[in-house]
Image (cartoon, rainbow, N blue to C red; front, side):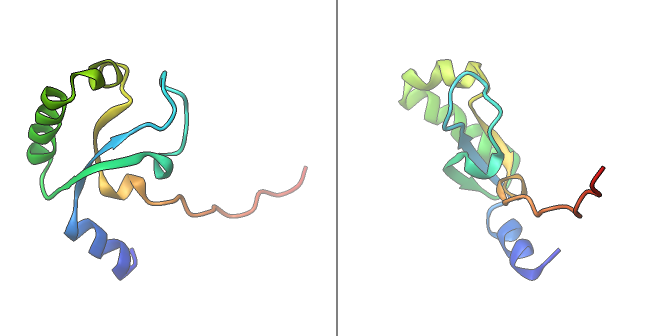
Length: 87
């Protein structure tokens, strides 16, 4: 792990994220929108509850799994793997 990646984890270990596409479509986590950053999972969950209370129109997205708490590391762009041999 690079020092930059470690710094991201130390600053905000948990984030509230929202899927830019609705309906549980399979988009990479790196393209999800950050709605908040927190040091602990319980803080993320608590603030997610407050967010849903303040913005009740987001409840459907939450129930569909399009808004949730995730580890900050999951939002990092995926590094390309080794090239696959041609067949």
